[in-house]
Image (cartoon, rainbow, N blue to C red; front, side):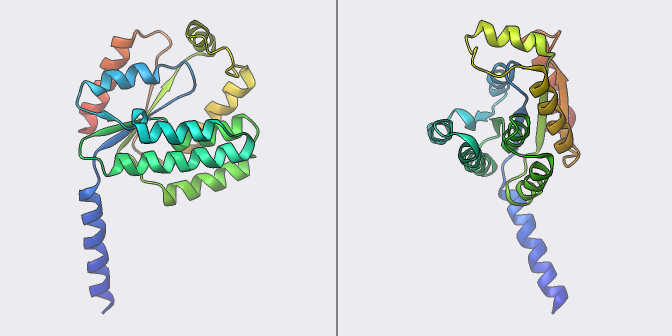
Length: 205
């Protein structure tokens, strides 16, 4: 009887995995080049779930809040985006996922390291898992210049936050074998895209 139950469970899991689409996440802090890269990856046949009307509506709802209420609302937005990407008809991508929400929660001192780590385990258990996470890195000085050029001067770009945000992503990376990093500091957008195309090819995506 136990063997039969296990076989049924295995078939259900395999069927669930077959139903799930190929999808990736582009992670990184402000000014690293996520949106630029997303538009380039889109040319490879990926749909950007983050830009859909439903996702944008949920994001704006979260942005209107403050403190931990805002954080929890962003996690619901992340859950929505993850579900949309996981069961999309075409290969999909997200510009940021719950990993950024967790990193911001710690970097902005809303959650302690212990609370963040506790919530990371919960999200890993409860949220859809992407086929690949691409972390875009960039030196702080370059990010500051990029953010200033696009007029987003309200972003917190201090060195301490940058360090804490990076530490949080590094901690979460330990849980994901399908995680790649690209440093965009000295690369042009086409060079970044070329590096990511190499990653996708190597990963079979």
